[in-house]
Image (cartoon, rainbow, N blue to C red; front, top):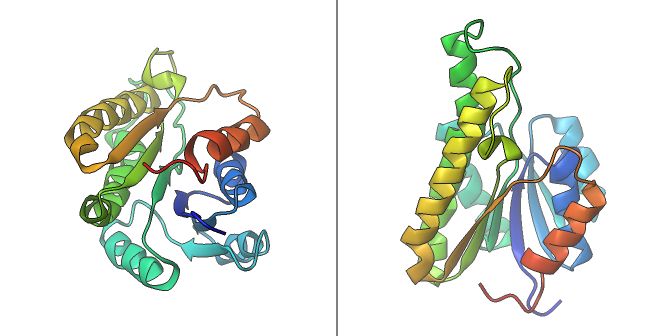
Length: 204
């Protein structure tokens, strides 16, 4: 369809990631979706065989990301919208959580998104257009006991998103930090993507 875009969405096997993908597909766009298991890739491909492009990728495998993104752009087209959705929440009070627990949490929730951004940003800057959506959390604004490392990672992603937005605004690139509540219906998320990000009339 005219004005269709190419989305790259991480973590599309279920939940919010699948809802983001469905919203983009409903608006007539192409979606490259990352999953960690081949069977999830097969399931994702069936959503819209001509417009869904599964990519088996762990976002914490930073070295693999540039080549994987470049390969998909060569096959599908330049990335217009990146949605950093993949991540998880570690539960446990800080005293009992190990340094490894913290490192794994930040690897998935902070450094993985940063690596994805760094892979798509040069192309977006060259084309002077693009939209980066980082899925944060209410845990990036308020803190709760028992999820210290999770809150820390989401606060970090909020700060990175805000600073990045100021760095790239002059290149026509938008950055959105999206903090859905844990109870946010996936259908509402899909509609938000379709209206606010995937709309064919949205140029930046």
